[in-house]
Length: 118
Image (cartoon, rainbow, N blue to C red; front, side):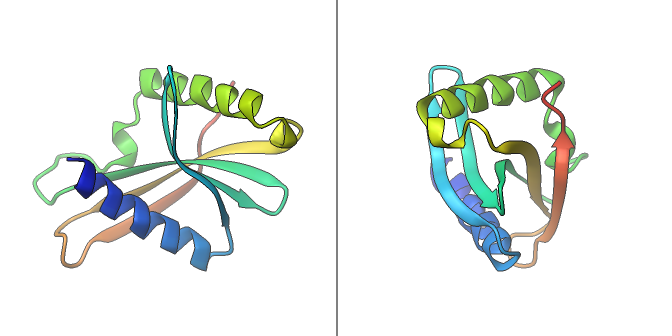
């Protein structure tokens, strides 16, 4: 379902760029996992997890980011910072952006600081 994920990542990127964030990387991979979007808001580096759930889902996408998934994202972000030392001294934040409902008219929920790295 890569194409569906790509569609929502593009929508999230556009939404965040309208809010003033700037794209640093998209679909960044390492052996721990993948970062959907890495954005910058001023001096803050923002790691964004993008989720979509259709109208039949019982929870929205943000609620589906389990503690195990959070740990995986944190490890992946650590690897990103190690691979990109220019960002090592930036404040970091983990956001989620979730789309839910019908594809034709989805609802968007952007949660800044959705979880902490500590």
